[in-house]
Image 1 (cartoon, rainbow, N blue to C red):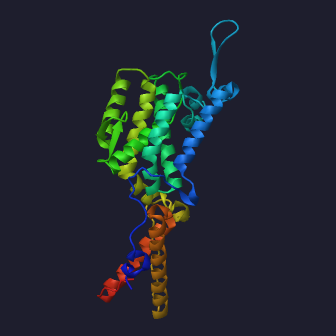
Image 2 (cartoon, rainbow, N blue to C red; image 1 turned 120 degrees about the vertical axis):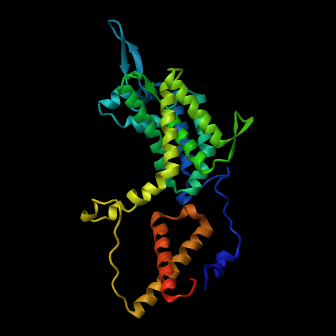
Length: 323
């Protein structure tokens, strides 16, 4: 029977559309967006309540005994000259520190509204990876500018804004006509907002305006997000997914080669057909129950391969025989 005849296909869908602002739930009932917000807020509160924690994570400046200023870098704050000396973990840890309550509030608010639809569309792990890469791209660009003397290497930087701007770029490409409210008052298409914020970042960098180092991180994160929305999934499908399954002889190529199928008997073809039907039925039922974001990469690949085999069988038989 066709998939339209399945029990889950006869009932209406229960999951919400991707672009909505309701709560998102990741695999295992945990939302990575909520987890990120809790972690960022908790770190800021700890720094505010316990000065030793702040000095440990963010660093500080002290007057030297014989004049001048001594800089203590701390462990997590973004210092470009420290990164260039090998402390590369700062490229990640600085994403979880914030300079003020307002800085934290704006970043977490935007993370809430932009991150949840993306988490529903992707998986928890994929969202966390791309979120981190957006911030990483901003901090790497910041370090490059410091290495070129554009930004002082001793100037500290903190915040998740590179990550947030990356999400803005992704949503602007995937949902260009979604409406957001600037300062909760002015409606604007999110694609237009992304272009305006990107233009402001470019202007601040060129004129060495206020927070131009931070704007450099914003711009790099935004551009990485736009690139990922346009090319990232295709790049991952061809170069990233399944790399661990390649043999030594396949590492020289970015394409995965499939083994030549061997001739099979009638009973083997029947068994394969039954197995494909069960696979498609199981995966489509999971999509109905939990949404397409619940599928793992292995399940997506299995569904694609089972569908391709079924299409080949239909072509060979010269008829349509739906699973």
